[in-house]
Length: 121
Image (cartoon, rainbow, N blue to C red; front, top):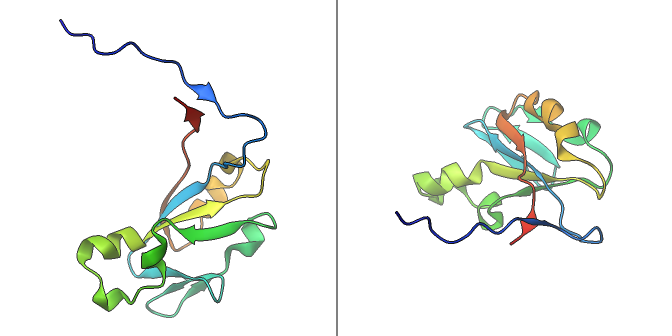
């Protein structure tokens, strides 16, 4: 029986690391994030402005930046699906778990979760 390589325990990131865990979300079909307006916008013209639910200095970015501003009509079905994935980057010291419920309540969000714990191999 092959047991594979021995398991190496994960090592937490150093306290001074600048890597932060995001809130990862997937938008409902027909929604996108408009970076100029800092709002989620639907094909029907509905708008969700998330600033009130997030701490100052939060950033909202597409998981695949090149698809965030692309013309949806030119994208393949797989690219259109990838375009729906967004990350909310919170300021240092803000745990993503604190904001997941508020983000899930946005009418544009299909699903939202705190990003995985980050560790060194």
